[in-house]
Image (cartoon, rainbow, N blue to C red; front, side, top):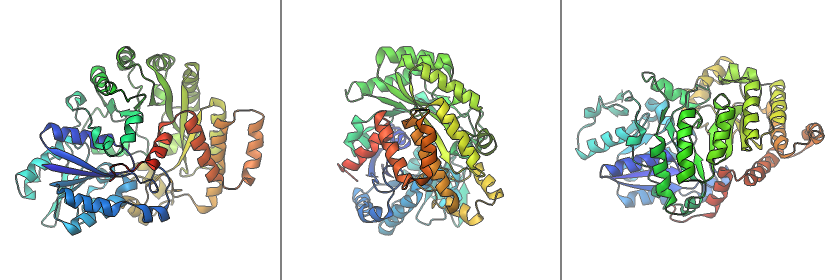
Length: 493
């Protein structure tokens, strides 16, 4: 059976895993891809250019030409409306079954299925559910035969069937390695980019703004939300890629790479011996110790991303449900600095009830811990995350706003979320100050910068240029990727 995946903007491991799994069962997969240079989160979000330079028509025509047996969309809130537009046009021209999966449909499957051109929704992990769906379609069975098939949701005779997910895949080593060629054939420059890999699935934390919380609720019957591949399995994948000679750097995309010291110790020895390439990863302040920082450095870590999100302990505790005090953050950063590992910090702007005092606390913290980069993002409300309830109770989000979120009209990180117009200049000022605090660490210049920033025009534009400059300086992978996408059109869509 031929399964056509349609996606935009970035390489995504989830689709690569689905593709390799289906191929291992004897099926054929292919991809249509839109780099979305001028729309979404990857490069520049510009409605005028998006409308005139999009590849929608080519994708739709090519989808019909390929004659797939199933068209599959993996969506998050930000690209959900784009996927709906493509899917609706395909259905207008054919009766090819269409399935939606990914984080957004997993959160609101009943809403997704209200679209008459969507036949199925897969919630949670998709490998075995996709296989079940493909085998069902091959058998030409009626939809009601899927009534008790876990992870698969559908509508039949005006009734919604919302099947619960099966337990997590506990042994990740049983899955075939991701099908990298699916994306590499579309964007060959990806072969020169850092190699994206995950050694685990899931996150132990329940931050209110993160869809990991939604997944934990969806899998409330599972006791263990984090599962990890064995070090040998990870090393085997990397060895296979290293043989091709193009891999120069690796990005571990685990939500928290440093959760288990014992796993890291075993992995480190084998990585240094067999791979020996520089890498970056994500850590949490609560998962960082002096020994782990040293171990990361010895293994080859050159860049670490650490989510702080706010320097205000009140915001982190009361609004974001993030663990760890400012003292714990300072301690974690001191370990990373001592190990001579570059660090970038993520900060979320626009939290409910956030004040100038909270922003001042953040600025003071960043000046003290001295990260190499501070990346700022506006708070994005994702469906079924508990921060939506907080915002509703505070009168920040209305029922109409929540409906728009669940329909995918709010979802890109370029926007200003639900921040009032009068507060945007204040946030823009601190966004600039956060960036300047990493760019200029002089204790004499920083107070001066704080005084003059209210009078600087085009703050957001300047912040964007700082983001690019500092990102290139430290070879931040997402920055390089943005420019690569802007320059390539090979095999697209």
